[in-house]
Length: 249
Length: 340
Image (cartoon, rainbow over all chains, first blue to last red; front, side, top):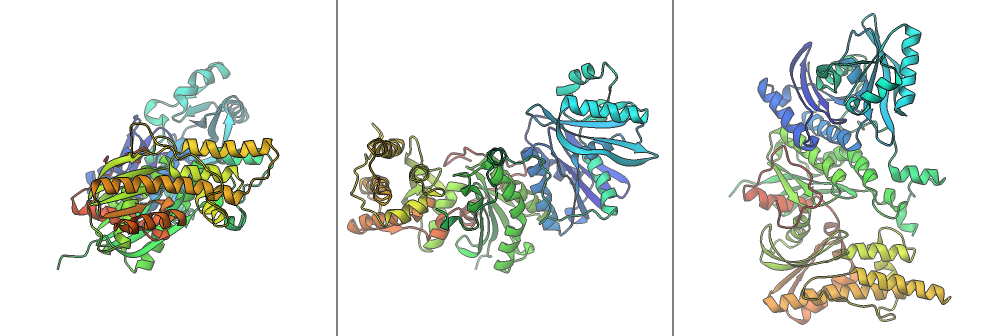
């Protein structure tokens, strides 16, 4: 089984090939170029480097969100184009779960963070118990201080510490230090950010549990509606389109 | 007999998700368009984030339908063409990302296509005998250009709008008189019940640029007219207003295009873009061309609206020239005509 992992949910772009239990290749960039410019060239590069023909791929594991709307769509559209052309399935991997998966085996409560703007983070809470990965709290958009409070509470209940990670960390690290009075752990640079290897590995585990989508049905998890829809709803208006706009002049 | 060239084309620059299969540039084997108009009507115009999300949902079914109805498998294709600008960046990125991944997976060459070049090329599909050079009036929601089509994909821009695009003026006026979105077809329909000479609106000339257009003054004149009538407690005849506004736009477009054709001695004038679907504009350009023995070309409305068949046609001529796009191809929202 050869799985292509794709990660473009936030600042980091990453692509990886997982062949059964071997990470054949992984290419990660934290650079100012857009995902549109980097992602496909990275995929081409790692396939060429490992003499893997696209037709050898059996599954696409894609970081499914939440994250930057545009970043998620670049990854989703690339995953769809590949999966459709190759006739293979897509396994959607929740982005924050995959980041936490970087620290498989950790004894801490894991709190990955992505910058969700508007004063919020995309974050969930995770842990490994007896080698098993579990979700303590699903990903959502939440104010940083609230999420730190939840993480601290979950850690206290378990007699654990909290490790923070994700590419939102540079923005929030100082504030987390303040909020936790120095108790927080931070993942080291090489494990901190999104990695397509983790997306592929967790994707494989999810696929084996029967979680699967395809090039037609897969859509990213945005968590938030568009600004225009939020504004309409705030005014108490429906966001369902009229059935026949032509007759509703 | 040279080998047939079969191209899969993808277009997602605004609010239509479209895919087509085109053989040898002009033979349309399929032309699938998934319109999002109903979704955006609520907001009075295209909401970029909603458009981008819808493209992501629709891209695979639309491409799949285009191949199925063409009776072509991915292995029969010679290239993939995709619109990479101008347009809404988030919307463009869906088509571009999908096209790059599909082309890479199938080992096919990729050709990035300029959306407006696509609109012009729609004429090649409609008229198999049409060849450059010819004059072309490109009018859509985002563009108003008068160009010389010197060769396939080679343009001289003679004039353009200095403010609003013609289609934008239609949308704004439609909103002002409560017709809603999309303004073009709604004004066109309303205008049929009205008197185009009922109200005299200004036809702006751009000082020092004989072939440029300006529509913001006209739009303001319509808004002022409405405001004035409201203050005076007078009832406005929407049909007369729509017809008079439309006439002002159509007259200016026709006059400029014909002045240019006359000056350069062109025997052929083509129209392209969404606004080229407007029935009054088509009739006016046809009449003006007939009066001066100029051949007039305009695509059927289905080829005037945003579609992928036109991208496949424009892409074919780029493909023949050897144009190939790399996998680093990005969306370019402000791509200018003639730029690559």
